[in-house]
Image (cartoon, rainbow, N blue to C red; front, side, top):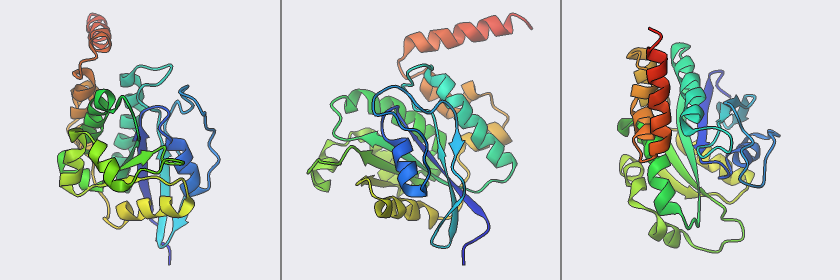
Length: 235
């Protein structure tokens, strides 16, 4: 018998990594997909609830980091808002999936930035409820061992915590396996939920916000700090 309690899994990643395609395959949804690097998802978009074994599941599509029209802090804001609201409403967050392309020539340059933000959003004690899903494997005949050889050390905390790193084969059945690995672990409260809903922190001062702004993207950081200074000048 399927549980009436809805279990929510957030799907995150950089723009163009296959988040929406994965969600459509897993849930039977028909969210629009762009087959280029132009961002298609501008906000947090939950699927309709669907059944997977005895679980009632909602997958949440999110705008991607490296968005073609938004700064990364503007990408994080609706994700953080959604997670805070779910904590206040006692929503049942089961975990988070992070989509990352493989092979990716720029992996060493980009992974450290965005995966560190993702890790801080989850928190070190809840990374066991996270799965890193490597995409763009269709037509790629690299084995799992070759994939692991190319992974940067930034993924090590996820592995050490008991989270998963898997490849995506673009099928419904495999998407279900990825979801089951998270759903079978039960509910979790993510670090950013505790910071926003329980500690009343501004997003700028959450661990994920700090990781985003202190990642070396100096221009974005300066723009944000200038915005804060102008805002505080009114008080």
